[in-house]
Length: 137
Image (cartoon, rainbow, N blue to C red; front, side, top):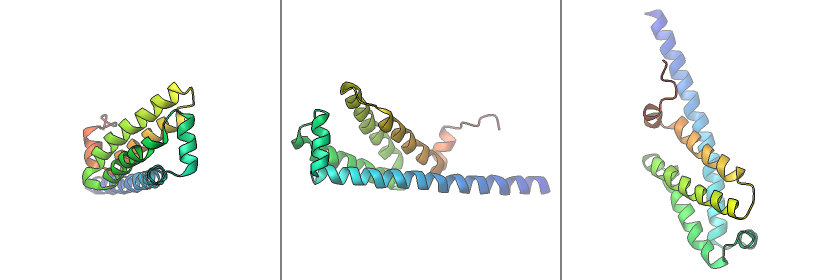
């Protein structure tokens, strides 16, 4: 019985740590995405210039920014976080496609998409049950 209790405490501590790490990763992603969305919605001059270099007309930025803003808010809310992650995956997949077409490095959008899912995976117990990477236990 003593062994069982100590292993449960270690598992609980490990789970709590992973949840907090997931919250930090998700929080950083959320802050960056909200900033990016706001810059698109207000049509900040540097955002317009960077988008023009990738072939996006300035009049499309607000719509793109609103899509990003809504997706990020859905990701930030625990009840809708999986839907938000799916929408952000689509958004970031589009960013990857644009970067490939413009012959730019796509690493940032790809790594960011992975961080969105890693943060969610670590903070969402139901997602960890659905996708158990440690099946051997």
